[in-house]
Length: 81
Image 1 (cartoon, rainbow, N blue to C red):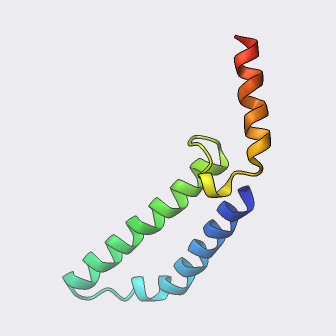
Image 2 (cartoon, helix red, strand yellow; image 1 turned 45 degrees about the vertical axis):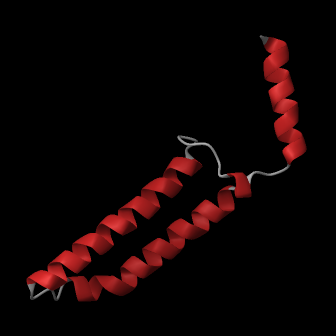
């Protein structure tokens, strides 16, 4: 379902809002490495969920709606060929 992807994106942005004041206070190289990795993880989470919303990747098996509808779509594709 698309709602799970939207919820994950909203939650990721919420965590970014909480972390942003600390990102601005970077003083050491270790802190810079930590926040760089954290930001890359954030962008991978948001990017992956946007890919699901935009149908760039198939929907995960756990989020598919009803298996019966999937079977109907497969049969329609086979019949159209």
